[in-house]
Amino acid sequence: MQEKYQVMDFQQRKCCVILELSSNLPRVLQFCTSAIPQAFLDGTDTIPSRLTEEGTNVPEVALPEVVVPGRDKKDGKTCNVG
Image (tube, rainbow, N blue to C red; front, side, top):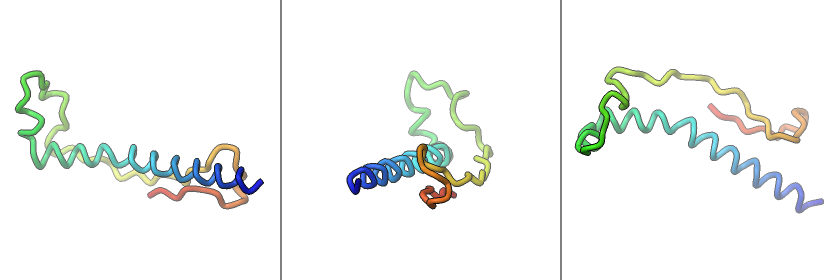
């Protein structure tokens, strides 16, 4: 029984990390393209129109609490993101 909870806790932590990485990746990409555009424009196969436009802001979205599938909301097993 204890092993089952350890596995579920590990899966929850892994899901939280993946969610945080995927939600912050657009911000990192936007920063990099505005700070060092030559890193993205120097290649011969680069299509400039596909890069982030100057002045584009990633909206500040308040992500809701993410509940791990199979867990009851009452037990408090959520990943607070935001």
